[in-house]
Image (cartoon, rainbow, N blue to C red; front, side, top):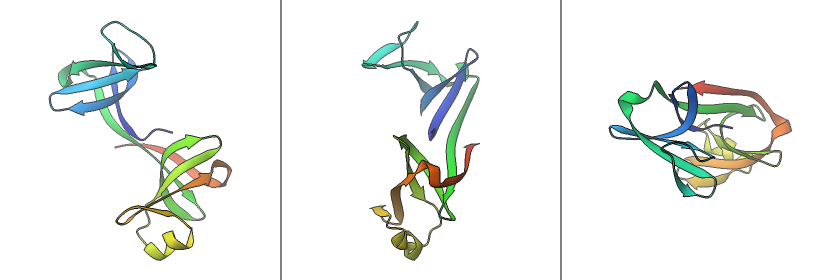
Length: 120
């Protein structure tokens, strides 16, 4: 599941992180101009005008009839964040209070519907 920035550079899409007039692009293997930041994670910093496209990807779904964004996936479960804005609904679903007005939980992937990726 994707939730974050992506950049297209030289015909390939990378996880990305904008930083002012630069964009950091990431890949899991070594490559020309990429530096290891930790095992299995390599970064290259590019001027933003060298990037072909920069977008934010958000994955959404419904679970138990309620709207969510998908933050992560692990072993058949999805980490979801409720976007319906109604505290009583979040509470009745047993969601954790992550921050003021932010409710998250783990949903079985088999129970999630309308899984969609959006480019923002």
